[in-house]
Image (cartoon, rainbow, N blue to C red; front, side, top):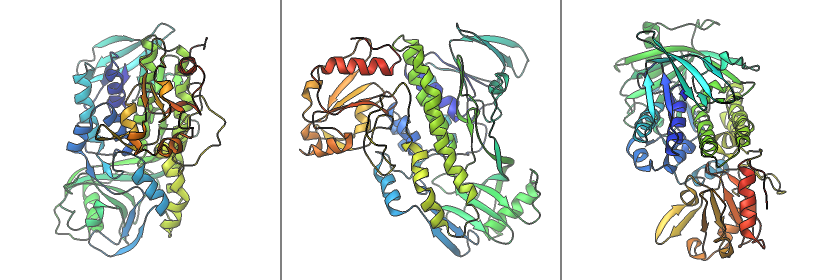
Amino acid sequence: MVVGAGPVGLSTALFLAERGVRVLVVDKRDPLDGPPRASANVRTLELFRAIGLGPALDRVGWDGPAALRSVVKDSAVGAVRHRAGLPARYADRLTTCSPIDVRRTMTQYEVQRIALEQLRRRGGQVRFGVEFVGLTADAEGVRAQVAETGTGEEHQVVSSYLIAADGAHSRVRNLLGIDVPDRQVAGRLNTAFFRADLRRLLPESATHSCFIRNEQVHCTLFAKGAAGDRWSSHIMDYPGKPAELAQLSPEQTLRLLRAAIGDDTVPIDLIECNAWEATFGIASALRHGRVFLAGDAAHVQSSAGGLGMNTGIQDGHNLAWKLAAVLRGQAGETLLDSYEPERRAAAEASLAVSHGLHDGRQAQDTDQLYARLAADYLRGMMFYSYDSGAVHTDTAAEIGVLDDQAVPGRRLPHRWLTDDGHRLSTLDIVGTQWTLLAGPDGSGWLAAATDGIDLQVRQITAAMVDDDPAVFTEMAGTEADGALLVRPDGFVAWRSDSLPADPHDAVRSAVHTALGHHATR
C-alpha cells in the first residue's frame, strides 16, 4: 500500500506494478487537480525510460534551461544584469552522462499523469477521496485504517508493506513517532502559478532559470511548458514583506507579477498563489518495521536546485525492486535494511545543494557560487554513492563526480554502443533486471548463472565499441576480461577485475550476498 498519490507515490507504485507487485495507492485528493509545480530531471526520465516509457516522454517532454544556468534581469522586458552557469567541465559532464538530453524535462503534472495512466495499465489500484487515518503493524503485515472523505465511512486495508509518500507533514511518519530532528526553516515565500504569453518577452526562459531583481520585487519566472504560456514565480522578497509566513492576496500577487514582467499590458490569468516555508531536514528514521518513508515524508528541502521531487522518485525506485525481490522469495528480509543507508546518503547529497544555494542566494558573483556547488549538484542529482550490504565495495579509491568510471555503489555510467546496427546505451542493456556486463575478452562469463534469479549476462563485444577494448576497460576499471554486476536499479553491485577460475560461483556468491542471503558455496 502506498499512502499519497503525488509524483513520488504514483511513481513508486508504478515501479512496483512493473515488477508484478499488487499495489494500492490512496489519497484524499486527486493529484491532477492543481497547477504544475516541480520539474523532472534527467535521472527521473532515465527511470521512466527504463520501463519502456521513452515514447511517452518524447510526446510530453520539452527542452528547458540547463542545470544551474541562470540569468538575472531587471524585469522580463528589462536589461540583463548577469548570466551564470556551471564551470565548463561540469556542464560538459552533464551533457554526456545520459542517453537523455540533460535539458529534457517535464513538470510534476506530466510525471503524475504518465505514472497514473501506466500504473492502471499494469493493474495497480488507485483510490482518490480516501484518507489515511491510522495503522497497526507487526511481523506479519500492516493494517491501515482509511476513511472515505465524502461519507466518513472507514475501512481497513491489509498489506504486506506500507510506503508513506504523504508529504512533508506526513501523518504516517507522525503516527509512528518519527521526527525530523534537524528541521530548519531557510525562508518564507509565496509561489504564484499563472498563465501569460511571456515567451516572446522573456526568450531567455527557454535556456536559463530567470531571476528578477528590482525595487518592487525579487522573484523567479519559470516557464512550465514548451509553449511559454504557463508560468510559476517564487516571490522571495518585496517592500514591506513580513517576517512571518503571510498569504498574498490576489491583488498583491498580480501587482508583484506585473512588476516582475515590466509590461502592464500583458494579460495575467492567476491560477493560485501559495504561502510556504522552505525547509530542510531528514527524518530520524526512514523505516519502521514494514513501513517505509519516501519523498518529502522522508526528507524535505526547498525548490532551490530542483532536486527534491526527483530525489523522492529515486527513493521509490530504490525500494521497489527490493520489495519485489523479497515478496517473490528471491531475497532475504535483510535486503530491506539497505534502503535507509542508501537513500539517506542520497538525501544528504541532495540537501547539500539546496543548502548551498540558499546560503549563497544573496551572492553578487553567481559564477563563483555555482563553481563552489558544481560538484555538489552533480552528486545530488545522481552521482552519489551507496555503502550498504547490497553493495560489494572494493579497494578502489573513491572517485569524484567528474570521474566517469563504474564503481560498486554508483550508477552504471552511460556509454553509447552499437549492437547489430542499432545505437544503444549501456543503460539500455541493463534495463531493470540483474545484469552481468562482461568485457570484450570475457566470453567465459557467458555461462554464469545464479539460482532463482533472472540474471542476464551480456558481453560488450569488440564490435559494439568500434574494436576499441579501452571503451569497456576505462568505464569498468577492469581488464578486458573483467565484468560488472549491475543491480535492477542500475547501480553497480560488484565488479571483477578479470575472469576468475569459476565465474559461475563468483557471480552466484556476489548476487546472493547482495540480496541478503548467506553466501554458500
